[in-house]
Image (cartoon, rainbow, N blue to C red; front, side, top):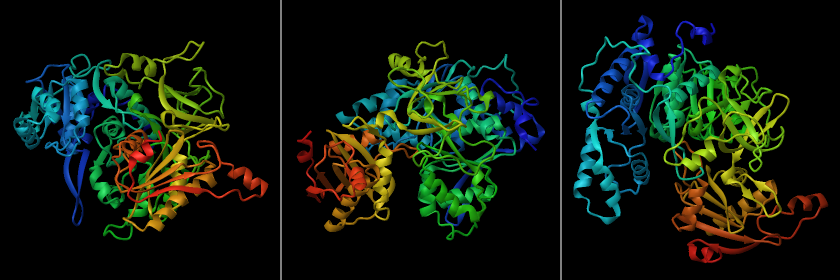
Length: 638
């Protein structure tokens, strides 16, 4: 049975919250689980709380009523809840109350771990009237604000004291109204053209920015994703992604739009035991799961398929959605090869692309399981398949994707790399309190053409082949420009550097960037290796492998302890932050080794021409070798 046509019977709603009463009043959906929370217990999966569609609809109505006692419609609320179903209820209740929600990961309320900078940023920029949190969290925050006198935290203390604190237990104290009914004309929640969410960008290329999302844009975005992945009431989604923004948050909305069931757990539970993800798919016969691209090699290495008591069975999977660009073909092939014997259908792999400025979803290369393999471009898989008009192949999605010359703002021909622009009803409204940046990013038009407004994604891409597959090649802000006029995406350097010593370097935990005309590679170590000769050999191997495979000269290799390369919550490398930490001397460096050779720094090496000429070339020289580095010696050369 094909479920795409259930919409004529249950018409699409202008905002996601209005789907809830539609499902809740149907006898077949009242007791159907909308969300299930699962904990990882000592003996395996432990089913936690469950919210049926009827329970969720009633609790959302009750909580929204309680929210409007201390607040007014249109107020901004920061949500500081731990991952779980209470967070889901609060997010939907804010929409029904007509409040502007800002969900963020709650920092430790002692604020002693230097983890409160994003909270200060959020409170300063969004100026919320209130904060919703667990009662115990609120008490610890109030203790902090009453005892703290340090000048260093004066700004944070002042911001916290201004907030009206609302405990979750107080919100849940109201009596549910099971007879609540609504219509579009009487609905007093967030209307389609009203702001309902501020979600921050991931911080992959710069300090996170507040993106303004309307309720209508979010609804269009998840409807587009539902159509692309063919989700329906029989779909079972499982996710461990953070529920505060981007893909993790939008999959909550996607569940309700589809009438599906979502099985959720926390990111920390997955990172602690990656096999948990496989067990969730197996136990609940999941048909859809979104994961960052780093998940697949991590599960191959640490999945422990033979260690658990529950045999792994992935045969139910229809959409294994891989997000986070770039998507390397080798990691997909390796995962499929390992888990094919556990029932994984290669047709289920769905390489996808998205960004906060378009709510989340932009495109997927998946097309109904017609192909088990996709064309490749420089070891990458595509993230979209475009029609001749530049739209995603499913025209009803109404998402235009074009590749543009960043300087001329004119479309480039297929086969030429440029910046990806997206035009869609899913486009967000802009950045909060950044009017000039909003015009620059959200209101772009093609040169000398009458066109819709486009969002500049800041991502590079290229369209290849007769079927017009779009490959996301990297980020404009991360590109390393070479002195010979060429350029390279740092992920190629990082991947090649890791492959030089995969047993000692942490995969996905390397950062390449340029400093004063030199390429620096920072790599996390898997072990606490301290033998100088071994460390020196690792650095040399990184240099030689990048030189051989990418024809690029690395000027400095830095080996650091685990956890030193900064990442976003979804696992993207923050190269700008890694560079800042390195230059500031804030990394736990095990060894740094600087190189010099007979070629200009930041130009492609003559390795390739030497190979063609049959020559061996001159040997490379090690200039410095430090197991206890002194950063000023390097910084003094800048």
